[in-house]
Amino acid sequence: MNFDLVDLVVRLVFGSIAAFAAILLWSKTRDAAWLFIIVSSILFYGVIVYDALVYFGALAQLPFGQQAQAVSEIVLRALPYVFLTIGFIAAVRRRS
Image (cartoon, rainbow, N blue to C red; front, side, top):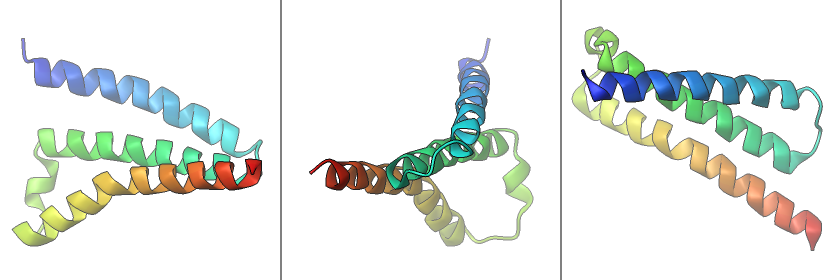
């Protein structure tokens, strides 16, 4: 059994549940800190979907160069952490 595929399916299932819950919460909150954390959760799911597309070879057909793919992957993987950091900073500033 291919454990990479099992890992990917488990991350897709639980990531989709988390993204769905985040979208539901998004409609109910107007707090800036929560909004940034919600966006980071959705971006984390985007990373999982990107991993699935790479695993199944769907992105190999795109006409991007190796450098462009590497830069876009780095940015995609870093963005959720950027939004988490902004959300945490916003929450700390609100509390102090």
